Amino acid sequence: MLSKSDYLRYLQCKKCLWLYKHRKDLKPKPSASQEAIFEQGYKVENYARELFPKGVEIENVFSDGDKKTKELIANGKKVIYQASVMAEGLWAMADIFIKNEDKWDIYEVKSSTEVKDEHIADLCFQKIAFEKGGFKIGDTYLVHINNEYVKNVEIEPNKLLTIEKITEQVDNLRSSVEADIPKAIKITKETEEPTVRILKQCKKPYECPFKEYCFRDIPPYSIYNLTRINERKLADLLDMGIMEICDIPDGFPLSTAQENQILTAKSGKPIIEIGKTATTLKSLPYPLYFLDYESIAPAIPIYDGTKPYQQVCFQYSLHVVTENGTEHYEYLGKGDKNPIPDLLKSMRGNIGDTGAVIVWNKSFESSRNNEMAEMYPEYKDFLASVNGRIFDLMEIFSKQYYVHPEFKGRYSIKKVLPVIVPELSYKNLEIQKGDIASLKWFGIARGEITGAEKDTIFKNLLKYCHLDTLAMVEIWNNILKIQKV
Image (cartoon, rainbow, N blue to C red):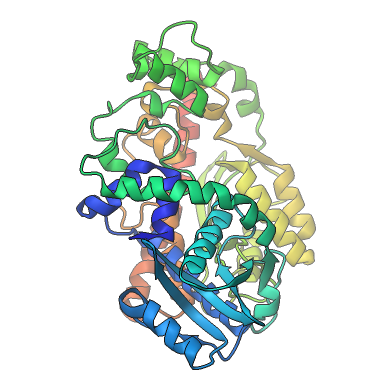
């Protein structure tokens, strides 16, 4: 039996489909971040159902959904949630199935903010399957998030969601999907695992759950670690029989960053040209404000005045370096209300009108400041001043002034810190990644985490964000020592 999810796996990677059918034991459990994405999807679907009320939901859809769908239709039901069909080796389930005169319209609900190619393929497969099951299908629609919606008190599903009719796109794809289906079914029946060249399909359009298995024989430092390598260059290297990054020959067309990555890998020595930035570092005006935010970006906004997927800053850490020493300031929202007003008030009290503001990846902090200034105009001048004084410490690494073989083409703070300041580490923290910090705080904000557990998480969040800015201070200090600025 080929489901619509199976078909989408086929489109991404034939090996992924085969492994899912024959080696589910290799599939890891979903991560906490993935579980959160699934949960968001369920909530979006529930809001979509409010646009089509009085529907009947089919439970146990995987066991007898096809039978129950037919029974509901026979009983005159015109709105069905999770209608399903099994016909000619295909199985499909429609999020919302609506009677429209003598035909049925299919509504697929997604948490995305736009129509994507995989959504069209998804609906096309559904339409084919339902028609094979004897249903007359009319139009096909995608229900997705409207990212311009601004929450005001209660969520308004008719404003939160956008309904796009994509019947024409679905019908235009039909011949391709019909040609693919027998090929996909054939793969599911094969006894031998298919051989598939690894290119970019492991992450497009979704992260493949079998990636670790497929990479088991790939060298630890391979061509797949080459920074911003495109699919064409990957294919060229594979055609040449090259897998190790150090085996890439001189003269192969590469970017400067890629060339430097290979050069340091082959030599085992770093490239240090910090002298090009020495004047800038030396001229940064004191005090130096090392700033970092933590944020959440829920698909369904939880605070008035915010939009879907808007980054809402709930925490900051600030190390202030003066000629007399270093001080630390911080703010962490308690989760009982929108944290931004109190966060801005605290920041305004701790960041003066002069002095450089040092961040890691200025596009993030600058964008958050612009968004908060729009929401709270009384802080517009302050946030504009902060943005005007930002220095991006990450650019020393991203612009290739300092390239180390252990960076392996990356320049996140968690990749740079162990090399530049090995005595500092995230490994001893309970919270070690930004996405986990966001999930933990989001759980508190929704009232799912309380009591002693909440208190422990608050302590761990403070430690995590504190290390982010302390790491910047120590990286900055070490860079100055390298060049004796």
